[in-house]
Length: 485
Image (tube, rainbow, N blue to C red):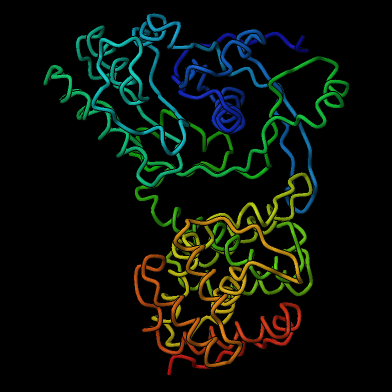
C-alpha cells in the first residue's frame, strides 16, 4: 500500500486524539524529531470518544499521507510525505486493559492530547472502577495510577504532559482535573505526591491551520500517490508550538533541534497574547469591513488594494505597538500571518469567522484599542472604524441582501431592536451607538467612558450607512488626530 516499510520505534508517547490536527501537527513533529535527531520514539494513539478512527488507522498500519500546502518564503509550496510515527491505535471503550497496560511500558515518557475545549472537564459521577470512566482526565488518572503502582513511584517514571487543547493554561487545568479525581476517589496520598513531584504539566499554545481530509479531490490524490489512503490530511506550511516548560523538557523533547518552530519558554502568555491580538484580532477586525465592502474570503480581503492596506495598517500601526514582545519578533509573526491569509489552498470564508463577532471583538480587538488609547492618549482610528463597521454589520443587511448573523440571542435582539427603532436622524444614530457601547454584557465595561470613542464611532457608522463601505473606507484618512482630548 505505502511505498516504504514502516520503521519500528519504542513507544514513548501516549496521545489522546486521532483527529486531523494531531496527525498534521504533533505526529508530524515526532516524525521530524525521529528523522533529524536521536529522539527515536513512536506514538500510541488513544481514541478519546467511543466513535472514532483508530480501527481505520490500524487498518493502514497506523500510516497516512500528510500534505503541507501554502506559502513558504514567498513561494507557493505543496509537498507530501508518509507519516509513520504512530505505532498503533487503541480504543479504550473496547480495549481498556490494553490501554492501561501501556502505562507499564518503561519507555513511556510523554502525553499529548487534543480532546477539544470541552475535553478537560470533570464529572462527579466518574469512578475508577468504570471501564472506562467518561471524561478524558478520569481515564488518564487511571492510567497514571497504574504507572505509579507498576514502578513503585519511581522518580524517573513520571510523565511530561503536553496538552494541545485550545484553552489558556491547558496544562494547569489538566493537572487540576486529574488531582480532582485523586481526591474524589480517595487514592493514595503517595500517588498524589508523586504527581506533584515527578510529573510535569506544560501549558502550551499550538498554531497550524488544518483543513483536514481532502474529500473533494481524494481520487485525484490517490492517482497522484499511486496508492489508496483513507487518512490523507492537509495542513498549512506554517506551524508554531509554544511550550511553557523547564529546560529539562526541552532536552528530552528535541523539537527545536529538529529545525521546527517550537519555542520552549518560561511564560507563554506573551505568545498567546500575540496570537490572539494579531492573528485572531486581524480576522475579527477584517470581517465586518471586508464583508460590507463586498468581499467574501480572507484571501481576497488581504490581497485587495484598499481593504488589504487597511488591514496591514491596523496590524502594524495599531495592534503591534500595544504588545510587549520585541518589535522585530512581532513584525515577523505578523508577516507570517498575512502570508498565511494569502494561502491559495485554503478558502476561509469571512462569514464563518463572523460567528459571535461581538464577543470576539471584546477579547481580540478591544484590548488593543484600549491599550493604544491609554498609551498614546489617541484613539487607534482603524480599530475604531472596525468597531463602527461591526455595529453596521449587525444591522443585518448589505446592498439589499441579508447577512446571516450568528451570536447569542440577547445580542441579536439588542441590535435588532435598536436598528429597527432608529429614526434616521444623526442624533438617533448617536443614541444607537451609545446603547451599543454601553452594553456591558458584551464589553465588560461602558465604552462611552473612553474619551472621544462615542463620537468617533458614531461618525464612522454614519459614513458607512450613508455612503456604503467602499466610499467610507476609501475616504477615511485615518489621520493621527488626538481624538482623546
